[in-house]
Image (cartoon, rainbow, N blue to C red; front, side, top):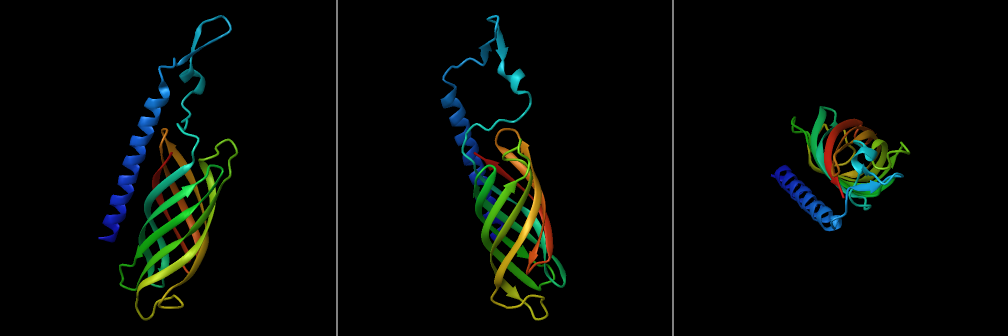
Length: 197
């Protein structure tokens, strides 16, 4: 049920963002021509100048994303999780992240709630390409069975680092595969999808 609610909230936000982006494009067009004069007075199509490089409609850098990931949160193996991120920034992003992990061997369920700080490493791609991210916060153990590998039944602070790549999908959407490592989990990874506007 919790996973269903997270999915519903994410897709509602993405639909709203897409509608706002479409309204912004319609309002800013104002009947402007897509051509600009060259030296001899002819017209040059701006699409030929820009090529196929996606261009963000807005200068704002707020983005949201959700996705699936795994993390080794118990000695019985990997847990499957679903998370959501709200963040702001282009070259450097700050935000909040929450992920809920289920362990199918009935050992432990974990809810991570924390902050993130992300750096994009390619100077020509200020909001895409290779990134590294550090994050930390509280890991709440919602179900804990004896024999688990974690230090306390009520939870602990978590922290770690991630590395991944943001692929742009047009002017609004993106996907990001990533890997991560830290404490009290050991390692993990996943893929998320989102929208920037």
